[in-house]
Image 1 (cartoon, rainbow, N blue to C red):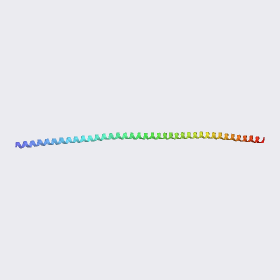
Image 2: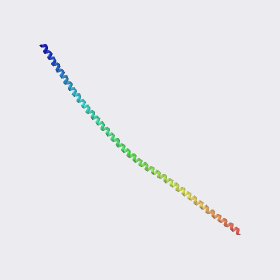
Image 3: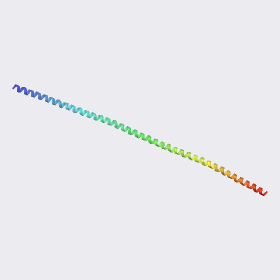
Length: 136
C-alpha cells in the first residue's frame, strides 16, 4: 500500500513536471511567436523605410533627369541659334565676297570699256589723220 502510494505520488509529481514543462514550452513558443511577429514587423518597417528612401531617390533622379533634359533642350536651342547665326554669318560673308567680286568685275568691265572707247577714239583720230594726209 505504501508502495502504491509512493508510485501514485511519483506519477503525480512526474505529471506535474510534464505539465510544467509543457506550460513552459507553450510560454516559450508564445514568446518566440511574439518575437517572430515583432521581428517580422520590424523587418516590414525596415523594408518600408528602405522602399520610401528608394522612392525618394527615384523621385530625385527623375527630377534631376527632367532638369537635365530642360538644360539640354535649352542648350540645343542655343546651339541651333548659334548654328543658325554661324550659317547666317557665313552666308553674309559669302554675300559680301560676291559683292566685292562683282564690284571688282564691274570696275574691270568699266576699265575695259574705257580702254575700248579710247582705242576707238584713237582709231578714229588715226583715220582722220590719214584722210587728212590723203586729202593733202
